[in-house]
Image 1 (spheres, rainbow, N blue to C red):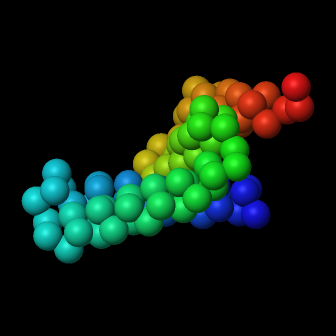
Image 2 (image 1 turned 120 degrees about the vertical axis):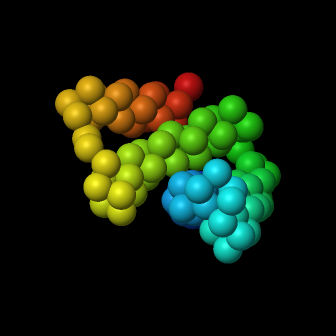
Length: 104
């Protein structure tokens, strides 16, 4: 259940980021409103996920997943380029999240 909540939270934050881009610097009312709605929803689910998990690990895993999703959304929705350096960076994020989830 924890991993599902973390994933949903990251997806909501990423969708909020898409609307952040579409809001054109918070100058477009509807996308701006959606930024706040998705960020509040993401933060709420992340808060529930942290109920029985450590703050640092949960926060970093959500941010890591959000980073990966943001790169994918950027490529798919906004035709942003993806270089080898970007792929290497995303690989480091994935590796870091794996280390954080490892048993002590």
